[in-house]
Length: 123
Image 1: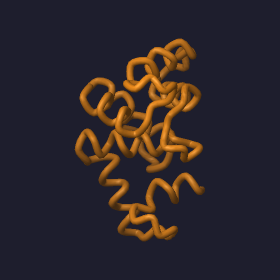
Image 2: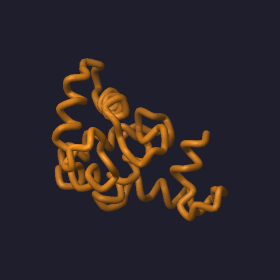
Image 3: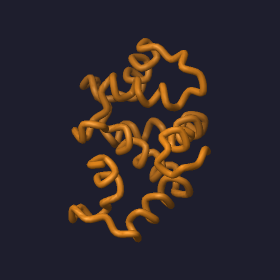
Image 4: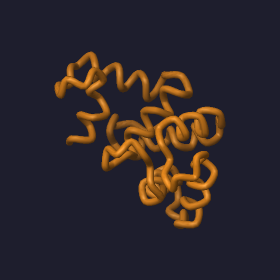
């Protein structure tokens, strides 16, 4: 539940209004490539650290695949591609720049939204 609040509390006031829910939904489904990438980043940053570690990337890949044939090697490979500063984690800017610039990656990851059940629809 806290993750949903963090995702939709756009102004950071610890309250989620119906306008913020609709705004988040709009951003996730019809926003620019960067807006959708930011939404996906926040969705999978499960610990709220502001970085995606290898485990969080692995979970993201599992959700994005229609078959569960993703292995940790793929998550490590994705981490090495997106982690431009070689810190061992992917921060929001690295993720947004890496994913928003790749239409295929963004489309595949956007399917995650349907699989999470957040919006009750498949994309």
